[in-house]
Image (cartoon, rainbow, N blue to C red; front, side, top):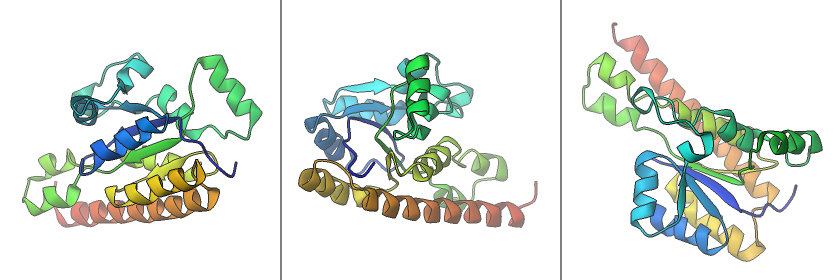
Length: 198
């Protein structure tokens, strides 16, 4: 798929700067928003229609928020190859709708370390669902666009405004940036754990 129309997006972010404006742009361009926790509340408070992830999964957030997006109804919609009719048939069989855009940024682990939190508290700031969604979306860039940082909102909007969708070349570029970001995030956690006793 070359040009990707953006009809359904999942947004789950720690850094909410510019998010309301980005969400409004997506809605104004015919996109349905899906979100989690604080992100969903913020979007709803901004007057935007937004569906809760738990409404899609039919399962609540559990373990203090550790598990919320790790579900086939989310990851099936992210990882389906839209050019593979077998994938699309599987989605239809299970009532899963594909996503076109995933906007996620990660828990600020560097901030947790800077605050001098003890090991157990710091570990709670290691993001699991976020990197999983980012990596899944980046892997499937032929069918979906990943947006890993607010600094990319403007260029994504420009793509949609000028082309009516998001080009394959741009999606590949964003995927490359995303894998760099997640590898740096893991390297930071590795360094922290190696330098701190249990």
